[in-house]
Amino acid sequence: MNEENKEEPGYSFFTRIEAELEKTVADIEDYYKNNFSDPEQYLQTGFEKFNLRKGDLIILASRPCLGRFSFAMSIVNNVAMKNKKPVGCFSCGDRDASSICKQLISIRTGIPLSKILRGYLKVEDVKKISKESGNLYDSKIYINDTPNIMYEEFKLAVDLMVNKIGVELIIIDSYEYLQEIVQADDEDILYLHSTLLNKYKEKARELNIPIIVLMELPIRNDDEPSIADFKENMAIPRTVDEVYFLYRERIKDDRKTCEANLIMGKNSHGVNLYIPLTYHTEKRIYTNYLEE
Image 1 (tube, rainbow, N blue to C red):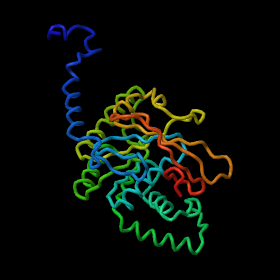
Image 2 (cartoon, rainbow, N blue to C red):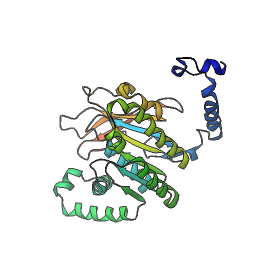
Image 3 (cartoon, rainbow, N blue to C red):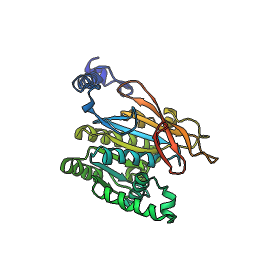
């Protein structure tokens, strides 16, 4: 198509393939240079088959009140405490740094968070908490609990975390409370999702670390979540590298555990997976399937 044709009315509604080929070939060359079978290109989360490729932007989504935050904090515990790698946590909503610490203490001690918050503790529980608090004190976990943080503030903080401290994983809780999202008009929200997530994606690639964004899905009869849950905001899954859905049934009896799944809804690098998990109802934590 010549230059004159490019100015014809309606041209803005489509583009020739040549406009995308350069970027596409560059992506393929990147796949070749950074072979996905190379373990050095991945960060181990402690959950089987759930390994994060460095430089990726990942969504972790679920229906309300299914333990999405607790699952994310289990990842933090595995990466920072077991694998001894620095982790950065951003809480954009109502959870402050103290809430993150309490959740990690619960995970580390096995004491249900509800008992910790209500003070229903035994002497041995207090000793466990004291011991694990000491272990957490020596960990490399860094928290920014600025509510409604804007991208420019995030960028400054994450650059410092990665370039000065060596953080290898970033987790962003409560995406829906980012300042840009809160202030957006309805007619601008699709464009804003695309623009904002592209910035996070570019930052992940620039720093060569995975960034996990936690998102809450709408309630739809507790059916299994899928990409269709984003149908009104399809710019979200299109922009990111991977989308995972945390799913389990809502417990209405006295079972101590139930089966759960981490469902890969999108994977830019290969086959989608169902990853089995076990949910421990009293402790409100997820582990590998049937793992105590």
